[in-house]
Image 1 (cartoon, chains in turn orange, brown, blue, red):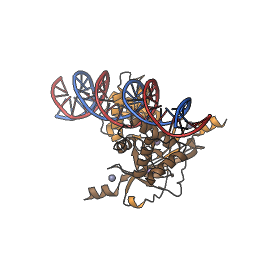
Image 2 (tube, helix red, strand yellow; image 1 turned 180 degrees about the horizontal axis):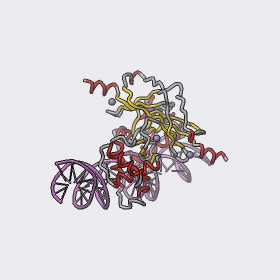
Image 3 (cartoon, chains in turn cyan, orange, green, red; image 1 turned 90 degrees about the vertical axis):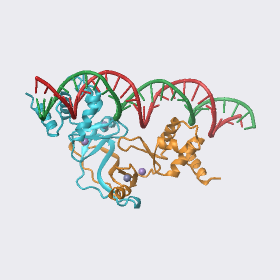
Length: 143
Length: 143
DNA sequence: CATCTAATTTGTAATGATTATCATCTAGGA
DNA sequence: TCCTAGATGATAATCATTACAAATTAGATG
Ligand SMILES: [Mn+2]
Ligand SMILES: [Mn+2]
Ligand SMILES: [Zn+2]
Ligand SMILES: [Zn+2]
């Protein structure tokens, strides 16, 4: 028996979600790849194993997984939503050339000083989106 | 003669853009409202004065205005693009209740410490998106 | 001022991401 | 085993945006 599979089943059960083959496959894909997948990427990724799965099911599932906190939906620029297995509070580096995403962390939150009209704004969360050129693309264009 | 109108004409000319009635109206709307308008809001805003204007023209114009740096396109969450007259580098507070946007500034950029796989990433720009509850909504729900 | 041309406008079609709908199916509890 | 709330999947609908092409026009030129 596949220990990884047992793992995603346990994750679904702990989260109080019904365990379906589709949900197992989608969560397994996310666990295996570990990156920041789009619905389309997930859909393509599970095709070989689940050729009948509907793209609706992928949308439904990632919505549920995000609701129970197993994954996190992130929006980057104007692109499609991405789904992140890393649910710790963290931030992202985005390469302008190839679009690759890296996680990074900030230990001490920056001091936001708010304008008068925003005084009293209750800060609940924040996300830093850094744009630039990734090492690989720098190497490629630098040469 | 309207001094404001002369102003937007000058802005367009200085930017090297052709001056058309539609562009004047759109830029004037942005100058007057000064906020973070969507294409739809701009379109509705100029309707009384330009009932014939096409929504395509709004898309075209904001794209051009952004290209020459007169405005800045911003993406917030999964919503439509917003267009910002404030072209200084700055960041945003977003209210989870009503969606209102506030600008804010950070004097000293936070120290991003990157993970090993992102070492050498060339940072070009960054944007902080703060989620929370605005003063008005706090007052409304607090009472 | 008259003419010319490339840029602009506009209506419409096409695209891409996402949500809505609903008939069918099934996981999991009784 | 049965039952039912919840899940799936096919499809339609919606929303934001881009693509296209014909008609119009800003602004340069003489
Ligand atoms: Mn991440
Ligand atoms: Mn702003
Ligand atoms: Zn890159
Ligand atoms: Zn609010």
